[in-house]
Amino acid sequence: MAERATGTAAERPQAPRPANDRPQATRSSNGDATPADRIAETLRLKGPLTAAEIAQEHGCGAVAVRSQLRNLEAAGYVARNTERRPVGRPVSRYALTGNAESLFPKRYDLFSAHLVDAIVEEFGEEGLVRILERWEEGLHERLDAELPRDPRTRLE
Picture 1 (tube, rainbow, N blue to C red):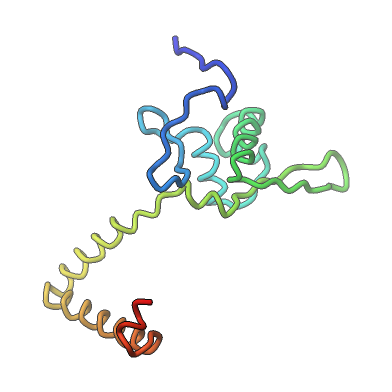
Picture 2: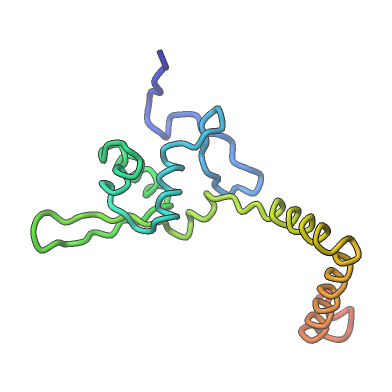
């Protein structure tokens, strides 16, 4: 039987922060996404949703979803907007905040490696070299137009 964590969230040991101190998506010890990760991903893909809509999407209870949403809201990753309805109780709709971007890895390194491989496969290494040379020339032109002419002044 699994051992339950005790104490408040503030008392539980926290995973060390990365060197750049940016919050990262939480993962369980085996690397799988946590319930909060899955909820954040759903909000990212589908936009603002109610707890009931998220629960239906994940096949779980709205109470469990609300608990995760409270944690995400306290961490600044989710914002709640209360909507009044003509009949019945108001409903809260949850959406990701700008802070939540840090939860989703960008993997630009993987993208660029695959792009280079695809260019080489399609156009050969010579084609890759031509593309990079053209990109470098354009970069130099843009920087020359934007930066001061004197190299010492550029470094200030």
